[in-house]
Image 1 (cartoon, rainbow, N blue to C red):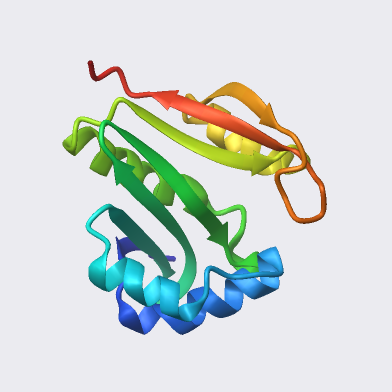
Image 2 (tube, rainbow, N blue to C red):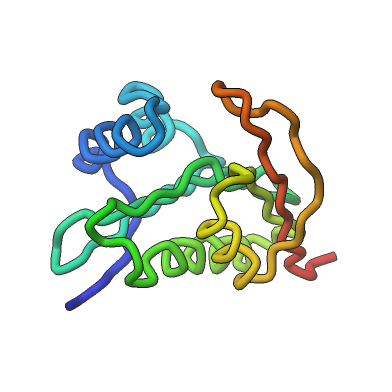
Length: 149
């Protein structure tokens, strides 16, 4: 099984849109995704492929000197293969190349699998964002110190 990661392009938008709806119950929207890829100099989006099939994606913004993960998902049938980590590794490489100081993200407090992934990458708990999600669930704000000063 070959797993690769590449920059997201316009052909990936329908997949990302449909998977976001399935996984999160909402999406950034096809127009927003298009604008992120075409016009937003801060955005870095990556797609993971398993044997040439789309399997997950990560979206991030480089807001110098910091960066933020906007969304990350792995399609259900491809979970447990290390794809989330590969996608995060790609963003961390871009952050290091751009001398980013801190990479932040929010994750549902109930998403223990994702929290474990982020902790394994060196993220630390920074704060709780009360009632952050539409259903009222809290978010855990996590920060990765990339050591650039």
